[in-house]
Image (cartoon, rainbow, N blue to C red; front, top):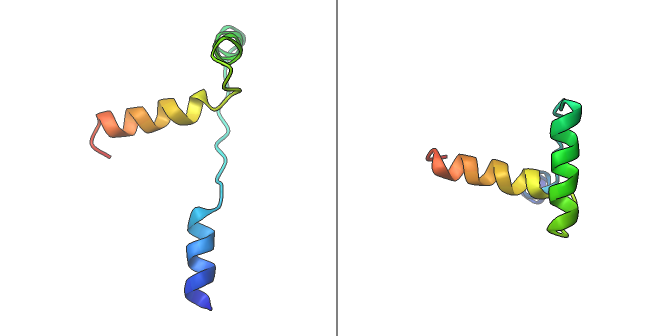
Length: 55
């Protein structure tokens, strides 16, 4: 039972808060609208950064 709970906890979503200046926030919002992907761009950008740096 504990193993199932641990597996479920690892798969749960974890949120990251990041303060953005106004211009960056507006650029992110524009990019998300133009690419029709909401704000999930940040997840893709973080994932790409980690892959590019060997993590």
